[in-house]
Image (cartoon, rainbow over all chains, first blue to last red):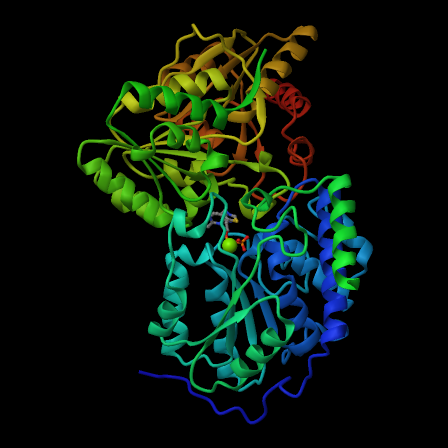
Amino acid sequence: MITYSRQRKQLGGLGMKCEYQEIAKHALNIRKNILKMLCEAKSGHPGGSLSATDIMAVLYFGHMNIDPKNYTDPNRDRFVLSKGHAAPVLYATLAEKGFFPEEELMTLRKLGSRLQGHPDMKKLPYVEMSTGSLGQGLSAAAGMAVSGIVDKKDYYTYVMLGDGEIQEGQIWEAAMFSAHYKLSNLIAILDYNSLQIDGDIRDIMNPNPIPEKWEAFGWHVQNIDGHDLKQVCDAITKAKEEKNKPSIIIAKTIKGKGVSFMENKVGWHGSAPCEEQTEKAIAELEERYNG
Amino acid sequence: MAKRATREAYGKALLELGREHEDIIVLDADLSGSTKTAVFGGEFPERFFNVGIAEGNLMGIAAGVATTGKVAFASTFAIFASARACEQIRNSICYPNLNVKIAATHAGITVGADGGSHQAIEDIAIMSAMPNMTVVVPGDGVSTEALIKQAYEYDGPVYIRLGRAKVEDVYKESEFFSIGQANKVKDGTDATIIVSGYSLNDAILAAKTLELEGLKVRVLDMSTIKPLDIGSVLKAAEETGAIVTVEEHNVIGGLGSMVASFLAEHLPTPIQMVGIRDVFGQSGEAEELIKEYNLTSKDIVEAVKEVIERK
Ligand SMILES: Cc1ncc(C[n+]2csc(CCOP(=O)(O)OP(=O)(O)O)c2C)c(N)n1
Ligand SMILES: [Mg+2]
């Protein structure tokens, strides 16, 4: 049996520093754009986009080794949005990072747009993997990590999972694979917001206890508050330092985070805010940011 | 006439069936609000099971339930039912010929803004290719209700393809439906439009438009694609000599393919297919997409004219 265990000569991107004030500002802009684009599209998924925003901001502005001007660089870090319905947070983050102009965000879900309802790597080249069917992104991310090891490249592959999504059996097939091949360059982040479409994950199909499951599957596990930028940043640093196992960061989050009328409300999983609601939400986000 | 999605009619029929029959178990995979199984689940929580986001498991559980003599209805989006859980359906449901009804909603491009990842354009092809499977594709709410009830009575696997978008009711409650039997919605002698699913209203509209131009076109609602109502197809070929098939599905492996392969063997007849030309869908409004992929009543009218020229 072949197992890949590698010693990284250099830890790509590890030297980066999280500038928390800057990241918080980016997170604010990302949240505002999520709301605006969903309002314009009149459909889509705000809850799981807002719960993942702080993590996305830390990844793209604190950790990931990527350059919008050189987005095909074979050594770039990869990010896979396995919970593809949260496409708005990915698009808003990519625009915030400078991959494409902010105005394009308003084409979300419209005929002919590069911003499909779920991320489409053929239409928008900065998307590393087409997703939308839950449970498949972790396998693809593991595949990217395999190539990194075979090619002796120093990039990391990040993948964002939903807590409902891990009910899919394929997640656990990929979990087993990744530990078996010691994919220490693979870092998963679980958006643990406790809700799926039909209700609370504990009522629909309880995946708990979650950390113990990943540990039993051979992963390096950390439990953090997914809205505490420092905790997110530090956890990613630790995950990068792990040399023998794939890492998962179980980030406790609030679905709809930042907009009080959306927070922890299952109904905001997949319905777009109207204009009035969007204005109110943006006002609240700014107030929280300034206050 | 009332406008409603076929998935809504499914929810209603399921509830009525549940009230009449104790042996129904309904299963869903975290989409019960969208698939409308929540209507049943609300009244019969003890006979409703949500498996979570796990479609392969959904079909396996349904198969196990069916082995005990109960009738299992399993629902999720068509893309996940037919494609994600494909092999479970094949080996745990069709191969042992178990009594599972797969009511799959959000089929076709009229899913709309969710985009190509969620638009099943190949589900009829996949499901039809499995021995023992019956494939039902109703085009309005009334026929959906009737066919769901028939699917309950029928012993064996049935795949019922349902839509997200609202469609106008075509039929009256009193009309007769039977699995395996086409409904002649309009008679004619110059050509026949064979249609299933979402496009039923557009096909009727096309026939009416053609009538104004002096062409008498028959419309057959082929709400069962498998087994195909070969009697009606043969008659249409003999009596009208030209066929147009219409479906919100890939032209490869769908209604058009079924009709064409049957007629190729028995009575070669000019056929024109209106359907998706082997491409994936994309985000957009349902009606915009129907235009984008050339499935409008205007496209049907043109196809009829073309096929008549080839007679
Ligand atoms: C295979 C598959 N089944 C069902 C769906 C429909 N769906 C979209 S989002 C969702 C719930 C996801 O819940 P979770 O993973 O917790 O995401 P989050 O709460 O972060 O939005 C479901 C069932 C899907 N996209 N893919
Ligand atoms: Mg969740």
